[in-house]
Length: 107
Length: 118
Image (cartoon, rainbow over all chains, first blue to last red; front, side, top):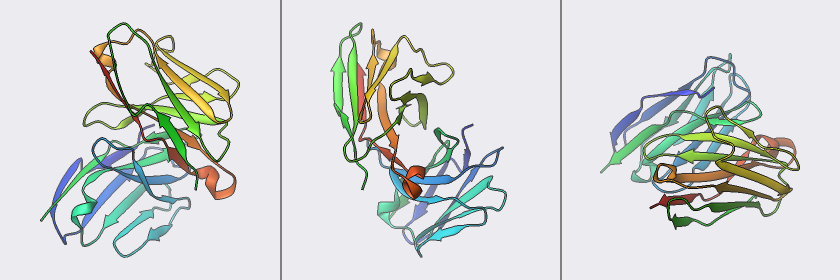
């Protein structure tokens, strides 16, 4: 029931772009994205409810495919503050986090 | 917005003792709360679902006699780690699904509890 994320880790230079993928073997009711800094609670980024949905702003956005089994998080022109571990999550009456993607943005 | 308060933020206990962690929804009623555990460099793993006024439901592999969950009111759930051992050292975090409408899809997380068993 835990979604699978890829890549597991990515290193970027400031200003570079990244894509984080989240996949499930079953259709998701919704997909949530969180960012967690070391030793802190995860921080909510966004939720997508509908197949085919895209949302967010220029810098951080996400998509949810039509079958609702795959979501991607897009980080554009990354900043140092984007560093952290990103989790997607699925909601089947319970909330399961994905496997996580560690993002390290370097100067 | 919805706020979930979790205490304590850090606790150190001796092996064999019990530790209680509290999770409170401050401005909304949470009939269901969730407890997670996170080991270093790992994802947050769902341990159990806490239901107000009824028994908690535990995920496979989680010992219900070791991790006691009580959800006595609509705003408070507690997790007690009984007879703690060093391998129970971890980051524990609760969440609550809140509100009506769009809010019912959102999960608000507590700030987490760093448990160290020595």
